[in-house]
Image (cartoon, rainbow over all chains, first blue to last red; front, side, top):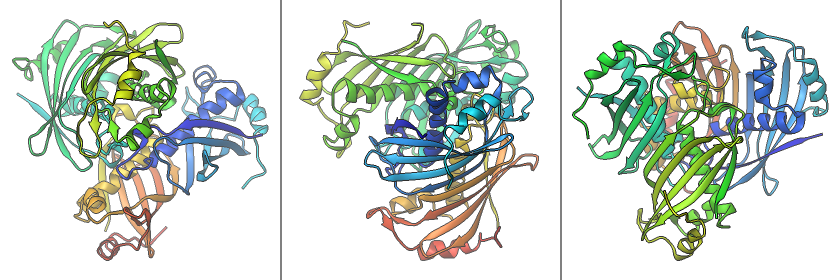
Length: 139
Length: 139
Length: 139
Length: 139
C-alpha cells in the first residue's frame, strides 16, 4: 500500500530564486508524516506524542532534488516504510508534481523516543504492525 | 534609552513577490525581543521563561508597513517600551533599513503569563524596573 | 457570504511555550487568502500575480489574540471583506477552533500593486465585483 | 582554513517536542552559506545571485543528527568545501553547541545555476579559486 499526502506550495514557501526554499521540503516531509499518522494509521501524531508519550525524531536524512517547485504547484508526497528495526524506522518520501514529474526523493531514519525520559524506546507494537502495511520492497 | 537589534534579511525570508514575506516581520519582532532581553536587560529570554516561568505572549498587534525589505538588507529594529501595566507591557518596534528608511512600525501588547498555570500574572518587579529605562514618551 | 479556509496546526508551528508561535497566525492568514482566491473567487492567487501581474501586499495589520492554538488543532479561518477602496481592500480574518472558540481576529489592509512597476494600481474591476459578494456589514 | 558561522537558536525554532524543529537545521545551513559568502569570500550571496546571476541550488543533502538543540543554545556552524567539480560544489556543514558537542553533520551538493536560463553553468573561476582556501582533506 502507498499513502499520498496532498499539499499546495504556498506564496511564503518561495525564496529569492523564485522556487521553493529547499528547507521547506523537509517541513513538507513532516507534514506528510502527520497526514500519514492521521490518514493511514488512524492515530493523529499529536495523540501519539501526547498520550503514548513517544516521539519520532529524525537521526538521518538524505534527499535528492530533481525538479524545483513553484508557487501554486499542487504536490503529492508518497510515504513508504522501508524498514522497521527495534527502535528505528526507515521511511521513503517521494514528491511528485501534479503532472507526475518527480520533484524530490528522500530517505529518513527516525528513532522511537520516550518523550518523558528523552531516551530511545522500542517501536510500539501497534505501530510496528500498522507500518507493515505500508512497507515497500525497498530501494 | 533606545535599544536596537541588528538583523539581516535572509534568502529564505523572501516570498514569491521578491520581497520579505510579511509574516517574517512578526518573527523579526520576536527575535528583537529576544535580543532586547539578552542585550538590554541582561537576562536571556530563555532563562526568564524556563527559570522564572514567566512568558510574554502577544495579545494585540498592530503594524504599519512603509517600505518592502529585500534579500541582503541589513536592518535595525528599535525596541521601545510605551507602557507597563499591572500585567501587560505595550511595546513599539520600529524597523529601519541601513540608509535610515522606515520599513515598518508596530505596537505590540504582551501579557505576563505564569507558564505553569498558563494564567496572567503581574509583571515581575525586576522587569518593571528594568523596562522603565527603555520607556519612551509615547506615540 | 462567508468563506472559511480549513487548516491544521502543525508540529512545527509550535514554539518554546508549547503553543502556536504567534507569527504563524499571520502566515495562516496568507494561506487563507490563497484559499479564498482559489475557492471563493475561482482564480488561484498565483495566476492573479503571475498573469494579471497584480499583487496585494499588506500595508496595515491589526490582530487580537483570544485563545492559544495547540498542535493538532483543526481551525477555520473566516475571510470577509470590510471595504474596497480605489486601490485598497480591507479584510477581516477570524480564526475559530473546532469547538467554535474564537482564537484570533484580524483586520488587514492590502493595496493593489502593479508587480511590474511595483506601484499602486486600482483594484481590478473583476476583483472588485467578486469581492462584493464577501462583503460584510462591518465591525 | 575553516569558517564558522555563529547563530542563536530562537524561540520560534522550537517544535512541539521542545527541541529545534529539524527542518530548521537546513535553514541554519543556508544562513551559514550566506555568512560564508559575506564573511569568508567577501562577496555577499545576494550580489552573487543578483549581479553575477548565478545561484547554488541544492541537489543532494545528507544529514546526521547527533544531539538536539534547545531554545537559547548558541551554535557554531563550520563550513568546509569537500570538492569542487565543473559545475558542482560539495560542502560539509558541522553544527557545534557552545560546549563543543556535535549537534549535526551534513554534506550538501550544490550546482551552479545560470539564473537567467535556469540551467547548469560552470562554477565561476573566482569562486573556484576562493573555495580552494576552505577545502578540507575530506571525509
